[in-house]
Amino acid sequence: MSTLLFAGMRENPLPGLAAASLNVVLALCLVALSLVLGITISMVAWVHTLGARRLGTVRLRQERRTSA
View (tube, rainbow, N blue to C red):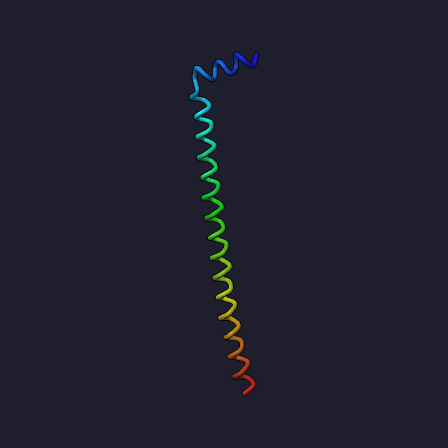
């Protein structure tokens, strides 16, 4: 039975090539998506850190003004 399956594959390799190329395209899309998500998350964290720093310096200035 398996020889019949392999005989069909030898005659027409296009379905196997199509599946392999689809796997490659899918893998590349997933890698690109993970890179985009990683960059987006790091940029959001960076902006959040900048906002926290500025808010902290504003609070320090207000405390110095009220205590002086």
